[in-house]
Length: 198
Image (tube, rainbow, N blue to C red; front, top):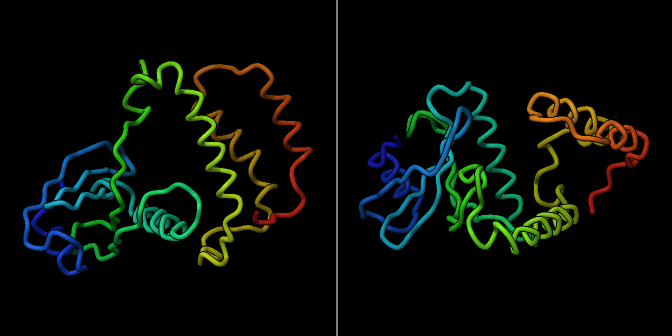
């Protein structure tokens, strides 16, 4: 559980809304890498992402990487939550963390048996189209202009992707997918030669 008193002090130091008001934290989800809590303080609502105490030490770097990406999307057309504030000082809550805007909704991870209406039928396809549109908008972001040039390894990016994601799929797959080997070979032979943002 989050130390809401200490977090409230830190939020006050950052000049965030609700100074002096009680802070409520409601657990939303989490696992071995992240815990997510909805934070409410007066009229201000946000979400905190923080590694659990038992997560590997390098998970703090992962949290700050996520923060940089969310911050880097500010001012772009890519649908994303607001970047509110981040903290690398482990004396505050014991781990690095960040606050982002709250988006009311639901997670497919919490609804494995059946999705809530109307996403169980008619609106489900619309989610896929919105995801594809978001990816298309992301491809137009000038990542260097957004300060993300040192975040990854752009050289050889496309060369790594097919093997990386097929290996990941092998670790998590629940069933065989017909034609996956054909699609994998096609992607390996038809990848772009250069990484050109946009």
